[in-house]
Length: 128
Image (tube, rainbow, N blue to C red; front, side, top):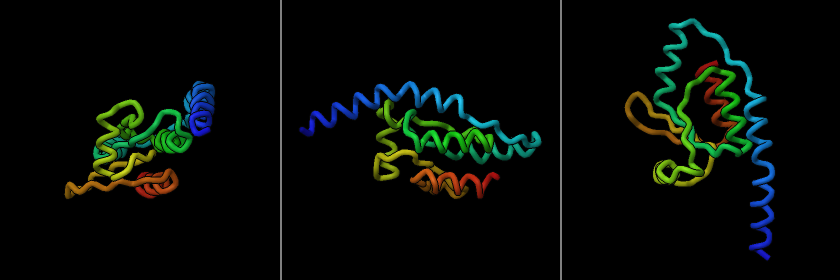
């Protein structure tokens, strides 16, 4: 029974995947426009961040849309298909759950922020 349920959800995911990727592409909002100096400052701050994600995860898509709306060039790391990123997420954040924002502070300390709502609030408070 467990195998049958697993196969059902795997098939459902395969059927829905192209539609989710299309939605992610078409629904991407236009980014905010900043002055060149302000955008360079944002880019320097974003260089210390990385988003661990799955391409078709609806919560990850939600965070990527907010990143697009705020014009944030945060590095995307695929934790689903890249074993190295998956292992880094497990070692650093202690669980393979996406989305997860890795933030390196000025002092070099690393913070792992899970949950799409928390990530979006953090990005809005810091960059909006």
